[in-house]
Length: 188
Ligand SMILES: Cc1cc2nc3c(=O)[nH]c(=O)nc-3n(C[C@H](O)[C@H](O)[C@H](O)COP(=O)(O)O)c2cc1C
Image 1: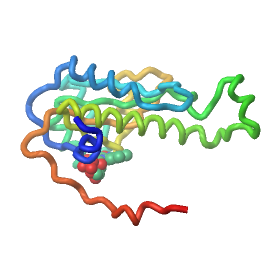
Image 2: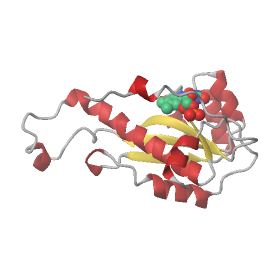
Image 3: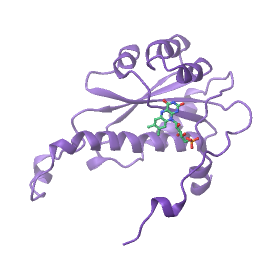
Image 4: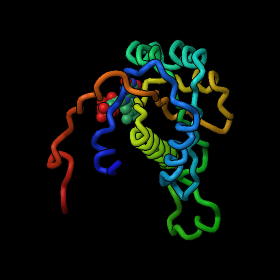
């Protein structure tokens, strides 16, 4: 699939066929996702792929703060990726590199770089899935602690987002509006 087409035609999919995506396809999607760039190439993103119905039901009841819209999407979902990241790495350097930064790194900014890495990983996953014919929808309205508990997330990781995935039911979602180029761009 052409890259421009892939970017422009990816949509948030919220209606799924009653068909699981096989694990080999999900493995291929992660194989593509791992090429996402990351701070100092630390590759902090982790993907916990849930295709077990009981765990998906638990994520619907406990993992989305009772947000009905997300609960409804999860009711027909056959797969959910818990996107997490290893804490405390992005935004930092090991000693050798730290010495190269004259004024030091802002520790306040470190959490932003973790979220930044997770965001890039998230979009890379969604685009890779789209290229493989798998629809996705990112959830930001989530209860991170309940999700971590439901999937037994390793202690050193934090939940960044849920990404519901599956084969889209019906016609592809229509394009959502976008701001005009001149509203979001300036040259200096
Ligand atoms: C950080 C983030 C959080 C989001 N959270 C939710 C969510 O909780 N529930 C939902 O249905 N969609 C969620 N979305 C999907 C957006 O609503 C969607 O991307 C946007 O409306 C543009 O539509 P498109 O993805 O089809 O292009 C989220 C998207 C992002 C990037």
